[in-house]
Image (tube, rainbow, N blue to C red; front, side):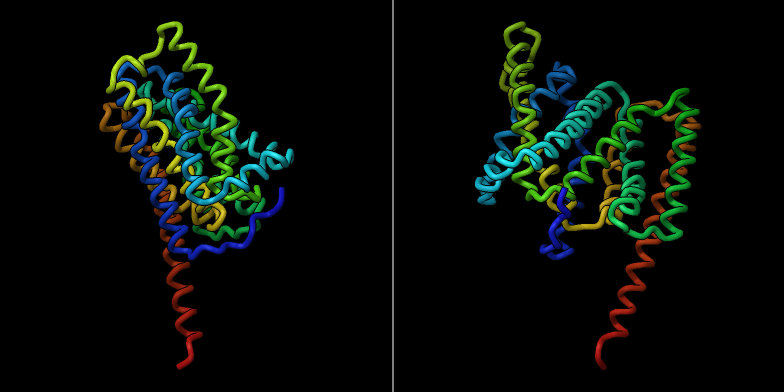
Length: 309
């Protein structure tokens, strides 16, 4: 893979895009819970995500004037191969997340997205030579203890959390390194998922097992999967190529916090061991945030000292 091109967007714009995508992801469980209440199964939700995302991703490509880039990607087997791998990873991530949020496992899913920012720091160190200071290492250590307590609370490894964390971290690595703009890459991913979505929706329609076309309310739920899927992914892919992974990791703590709140609101069990687990995770997030604030303050002070009098 070729390295990403130099950042050209101002940092506030990239930061704002990342912030927006994580807010949307934080409230995403409400969408899937609403669809489940309307009669959708998790596989039907996943199929409609794949089906309707193409229209909205195509709209973004058209608005950005990137049709030529899409054609170029489709003619480059190497780039298309990497995007096929990123498609596999994001499809796995979608499927596990939809299942979790529709089967009373939103808290375990939120743990995965608490782990993911800390995993991003390790990946940033390993692949992109980004530095981790003592605050980062303490944050990672606290998170590791939190995962161990989650194992005790569940009586098993938190597979949902681990699959979500590793699949999305791997997706972020590929999207950061593949030389394709956010909208064009996302549209190609949606095109690769489209046949699976069409096939499953068609089978459900013929067999009578689906609910998406039973009435206007169900159809509206199905169509909502398009913008709800594409908008945050486009914001993430755009910001991921313009921000360090460690910075993305800091902002990402917002999404699992909102997901955790949704899980508690939905009545999922919050045992003492589980509370202890999340306490360590939150401690890691707080340490990381403190380190980021101190680095920002030091950089600002250095900039002030460098200004001519």
